[in-house]
Image (cartoon, rainbow, N blue to C red):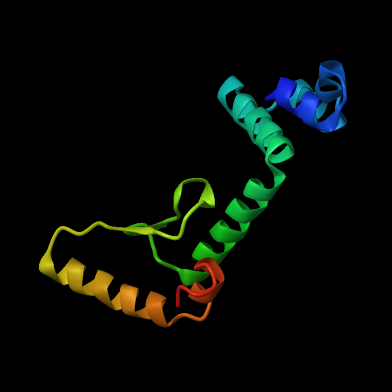
Length: 122
């Protein structure tokens, strides 16, 4: 991604690596290696794909407002390209399925859902 960012922004690879935010992540002693790698990847992804990152963040914010809980997942199309969403439900009894159904009805009627679905799909 560093090479792609450098080419896209017409700067050197060293300029990307010397970015203060990149260096701040590298020099942070607090997180473990896995967290550090995750933060670096997020930084690079945000810089390489700013529009996709913005749309992902907006989607997460809207999903949070729907308050679906851990047993219901609304999954966007890959890379937000397309208009078909996937809904995943977890339940282990008829009573839990009925609870999920009530949550789905609330989701369908929630005004924020119009911010999630592409225009013309509601």
